[in-house]
Image (cartoon, rainbow, N blue to C red; front, side, top):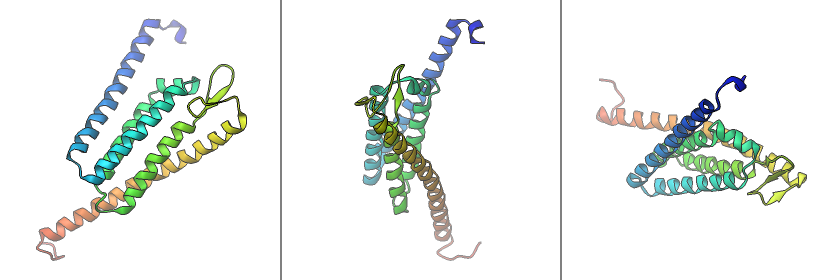
Amino acid sequence: MLAKVPGGLIFALLIVFGLIAFLAVVSCFVWMIRTFVKADKKAKISSSITLFVILVAAASWIFNMGWLRLIMTLFLVPFIHAAVLIAVSIIASKYYDISNKLTIFNTLFLFSYAVVYVCIPDFDDVKGYCLFSLVRENDLIMSICYVIMELALCLHIIMLVLIVIEIVRCKRKSKLGSEISGNGGTNEKA
């Protein structure tokens, strides 16, 4: 089916999608830097850790490039995932002073992100490799890395859900607190 589509059109679409992904990630980084400048100490530490984790994942992505990562890159998975990671981390850092659990959840969220990208095995035309291409053609270690990656991915998704739930709770607490203080400290509605 794609044989009838001109090659120039496919190339142009790939460039457009890549440009959109690049702009999305750059805008998230700009948002992160703006938030970093305005943030308190805990939020600055969280932003620094987020940036470090993304750099580790990017290094792993570059040094372990194979067919799986190439296909995921064409579908913009790493770019969208990085944008979601930055957005969740920034939003969560705004509520650190309300919830200590949110700090733990966000730290585990960031840690699991790095583990997923470092441990995901990839394959070329002959054999597989993992861990920044340091481990090649060793099926046992690749299987262990694959299991670690799956567990980290499950933890990553669970932490995302818990972060969203905790942010909603924090918003309710802060909204309830502002309603109480707005009524002169009483619980009665005006």
